[in-house]
Image (cartoon, rainbow, N blue to C red; front, side, top):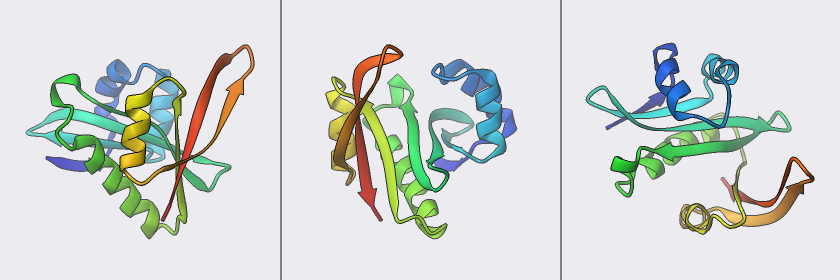
Length: 137
C-alpha cells in the first residue's frame, strides 16, 4: 500500500467518492495538496481530506476507506502520514470532528490520540451537535 498526496488524475474517483463537497471544492483541494490517498496496485482504497482551521491549524475534514478495505489499518496509515507531514511543517496541534451520534468514528479518533474538546451546533443549517477533537503534536 502506498500513501501519497492526491493528484489531478484522482479527480474523477474523488468526485464519485467524496460526496460531501462539490467538484469545485475537490479541484481546489487537489490544487492545494489537501487530499491524501491510500492506493494499492493502482486501486484507490481511501482518502483523507483536510483544510486549515483559522488558516493555520490542520483540520481533518473527512477520512473515508472503501467498505471492502475497512479495518485493515488504512485510515490509521493515512492519519499517520498526515500527522508526520503536519508536524514537519511546524503544526503543534491537529483538529477533527464527528457528528455527536457517530460513536465509531469518535472511538477511532480517541484510539489515535485525539481528545474531545467541545461541541457546536450550527443552527438550522445543522442542528445536530458536532463533537470536536484535538491532538497535540
